[in-house]
Structures are given as C-alpha cells and as structure tokens.
Length: 420
Image (cartoon, rainbow, N blue to C red; front, side):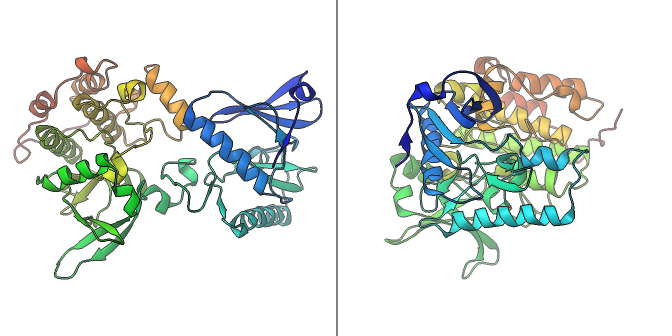
C-alpha cells in the first residue's frame, strides 16, 4: 500500500515540469515530483488509479518510484531532474558516445524486462523517449508515465499510446478480440478470423449489431459472419490482400490517380448509403476501417462491432458524439468529410494528437487545414463540400443522397482531373 502523504508537506513553491494527457507534473521544494489530476472524468480517474497501482507494484532502479499519495488526485513521486530522453538525444549540444547510448538502452530494456517479469505482467503501452527520464548527470534511466499501462489480462484497447510508437499489431487489433489471417475449409479466398471472448459478445448491443451486420449485402460493405460455440466465438470477414485505405495512403504511400481517389470517395458514399438505408449508423468510419479489393479498384466498409461498440475518440469523431454520445447518420457524413480531406491531402488528420487534446480541438471547432489539400481543377468545390460535411451543426451537413449526386460521375467517360 502506498504511503498517505499529508498535503501540507507538498505545498509551497512549485515549478511546472510537464503536462501529460490528463494531469500536470510539478517539482516541489522537497525535490519530489507531484502529479496532479487535471480533470475528474471517470476514464481519467481510471488511468490515474492505474498509474498509482502500477507504480506501487514496480520497484526497480529503472522505474520511477512512487513515494505516496496525497489527497484524492495527487501522486508524489521520485524527482528525476526533469531530463526527458527525447530532449537529450535531440539536443545538438549533447555529446553522446555510442557506449553511453548502449548503456541507456540496456537500462531501458532492464526496466521493461522487469515489468514483464511481474505476475501479472505490466505492459507500459506508451513507451517512448518523452516518457523516459534521465538523472544522475544523464547516466541513470527511469521509465515514467504509467497512465496507459495495464496488467496483462485486464481490459485492453487498441488506440492507447502515441501512434508513432505503436506496434502494427496494436493498430490492427480490435477492442474485443484478436484477428488472424486464415483460409477456411472449402473456401477459395482468404478470410480474416477474429477470435472473440464469450463474455464480450453477451451484451445486447453487440448481439443486435452483429445480427444486423450479417444481413448487409452490398458491393461496398465487407461481409460479416459469426460462428458461435460454447468455448469460442469467431467472426469471419473477407481478407484484403491490399490492406486498409490508411495503409495505402500513409504506409505504402502508393501513387494514386486523382480519378481513383474520387472514385474511392464515391464508393464510400455508396456503402454509407447502403448502411443508412438499413438504419445502420457506423459511427467509427475512418481510413483504417476501409479496405481495398480487386487491385485497389473496390473499396469496402468494415462493419466490425468489436470496433464500433464503445469506439474511442478519433480524428473522425463527430462533435455531437463527444458532447452527447449520440451517433446519427450525419455523424457518418462528418467522418466522410475528414476522410475526403485525408484522400485529397494524403496527410493524417490531427496527426499524433492525444485523445483528450483531440476531443478539445474537435469541440472547439478546429478542423484540418483545407489549404493542405492538393490543387485540383475543382478544388474549391471539393473544399466547400468538405467544409459542409464537418459543420458543427449536424443539421447543416449535407445528406448522403446529396453527396452521392455530387460525386456521381461516369468514371468510364470522365477525363482525368488535371492539376492546376
């Protein structure tokens, strides 16, 4: 159990050391680091409690030490000179020898190995230079910021941690299960098999969504089937050899004609309309949930309840979902606007922004920069369409049927759009 520290002992002059996703870290005259919770929402409280629990369990020279808890929302921790590893290695004045680099990485590995040796083991989930501190004249390394850490076996989510440091299997993991590529018996094509824990499929919301998804048959919607057993539930979807739209745009960075980009936008609208015609709101549209088939010519929306039930905040989340937790057909229109911007700019919307900051930006009306889109002959029309799609007021966004009319070109006849 952590020591309870009287708040009066950490009062007085404090210096801000840094700001995290849900709190600020200060140093006090006693030369300890004080982490104070900035908000009191349930999810943030959960992260705060997780950090305290994990720091209490982790007693190692390369893990920041927890001295105690002061009040309800303050952690009192070891002070480590406020020297983050990222500033040290990117400082042009730092003269770092190869042996020193190797020693620091060895200390980091020893700290991570220690976390993994615990029972149950602890996964940090946001390990990066900014969450590693150096002390003792830059010679001793200490891992810090355990707000996203979890014991293995507890609830895990895919979108935790800084995107640039996430492993690919974390990006592709669903919220309730793990995906594997396989070829089913008597099937000529590969399938994505998602193994789902029994308890995760027992909610009424999940059951209703999966039953509705199975009935959807459309060229631009990925087919879904469910195989149930007393021991393991399995969701089966078509496997895309070409991967997600996100992968094509930002990982492979394939050369794509302007015409094909707009054709993908049209196919996305056709898929969205098919869902809305069945009274289905996706609510979590994004380029990671869109997959390409037939030599990249066919785009399909992934209907995956393991990714739509309780989906996290993303760059595609409409403000009304953040405000009221309510998804409507116009929420999907908002997401379409962000995706269209992403297609035409080839940039990631709100790149590497934490969930809490992202929510604040969306609610305050911030949107991606329309000037970052490539120049097309019809760019002003496209900018106008995107701006309407991500209007703060859902009622002022165009309906999907209206958007379909705008994007309804004869793609066999239309000439390729020319750059200005």
